[in-house]
View: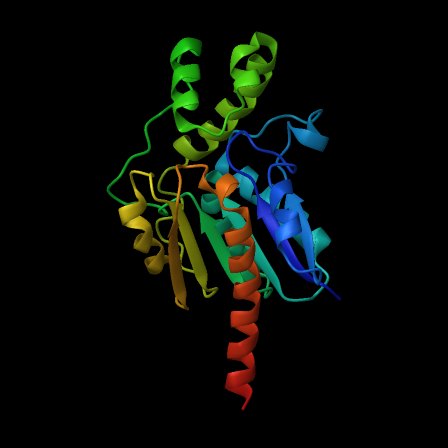
Length: 240
């Protein structure tokens, strides 16, 4: 059976957000993007605005798709935060990932409050999300497209912003590999993730802003392949 890579999207993303990464991983890894309701193939379903409900949804999707082989959870931004709690639920179910890979997020910071964005007026909201980068100009300039997209973004931001502090006491046994962009203001806090695992911790700073992943696909693919091999080599070493 192929190894499995489960990908959790960022705020406003969907199951297609990681398509560019699929060609960068080895052929023995099954590429499995997971999406929340209200977008992509699930656009007819109601959006989720509660963090616990989002975590439960992702957990159940992964459990349905598991094949018993080694697997990695990868999440960017919102997906990184949700991935931490999803990983803990998987561990409680006696199903341990090889790695949790977290991108574009310094992890839950106990003395840092995420600014509230989900309830901003339309003009301010558009300004804030355009400053983040990674949003196609076609969406920002088309009112109908933006209105549809903004509903998804607001719901995702509400999940994160209302649920601040949810993960503060989460500590997993799974190793963590963290990545952030060189232009992200909080990249100096990347080692904060070390406090959320009892196992190995690795990190990298790659060139770019919050959406550095779009400019570093081959490098991220190499790191995914490396994380599978790293865990396998440690397993062999411990058996000798």
